[in-house]
Length: 121
Image 1 (cartoon, rainbow, N blue to C red):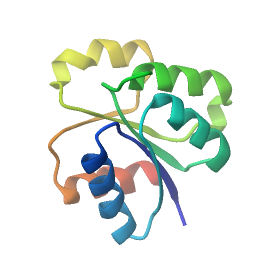
Image 2: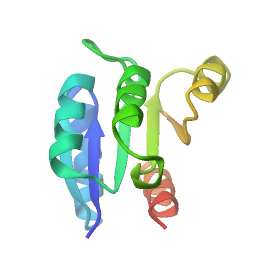
Image 3: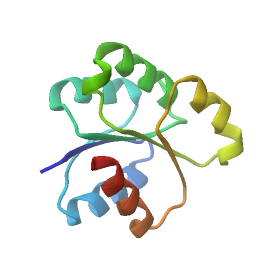
């Protein structure tokens, strides 16, 4: 069973995301910000991370860079960013840190599950 860590500061969005994934058979751990996400990542060893970009305490890019520095490249799980920004606004930032995927809010459950399944292969 795949473990997915979701890092999202908006409680309702975080819980909805977890519900979609859990109904589809995934084990989901939830973090409310980047700092909490790093702690959960280190204790749960997820197979995939879904992370918001704009969060208090530590944004998604900083969270990604911190985790990337802690884990060997071969062991680093797929990392998907959720954002309300347009792709054009975040592409240059994401390229600078070697991000894998960006997923725009709002999203449909079907779209989300498709990209999750693709990245877990």
